[in-house]
Image 1 (tube, rainbow, N blue to C red):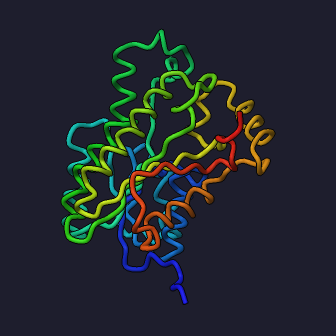
Image 2 (image 1 turned 120 degrees about the horizontal axis):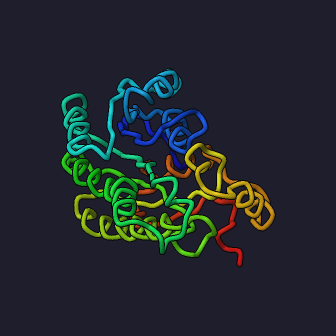
Length: 258
């Protein structure tokens, strides 16, 4: 008989929890419900009051600051995790950002400064997280997961420069999976479809994008943060030890439709 899926005894950090409607919260809730012990991060003191009230239901004894745009912040976070726990089993990276004006404009009009900031926070921060986590996963392996979107593969109206940036993130996942596999560190991209989160609210005409997803997806609904959390929990678990370098969609099948 196959053992039940459990994450009891596993410890990990979730970057990107903004509120109870965020994709990162859906991941944290699913992981906690299966027994994982979590560290939740917040960006700064302004965001902390929105994150701390969520901790009691997340089995999260640690709530630590980490603004990935600040030099040394990622390294400081993982140094504290090493001091507290000694090792780490998983990292969930659910962070993306771009200047709002450039997100809502054309790619061809993107400034070098805006593009550099966006790719640093949305893509290179995951590479830095992988580098910092590697040391804490050397003994027993682990899992690194980041979030992408179908606009990396096809042109999605009003997604502009985030499309190329998410494409770079997905390619980075494949290279990290190849480089870290010998240490039994597995790396994945999860690609949620349109969801009514605060992060998505900056995309122009986002309601139209969600309506189209419901109309054309085979399941005729949106994916949810809870759906994402269940997939992430599987990928982190010992049921998924044969998987790495994958990209998995949580969009009710919208990505397969022309």
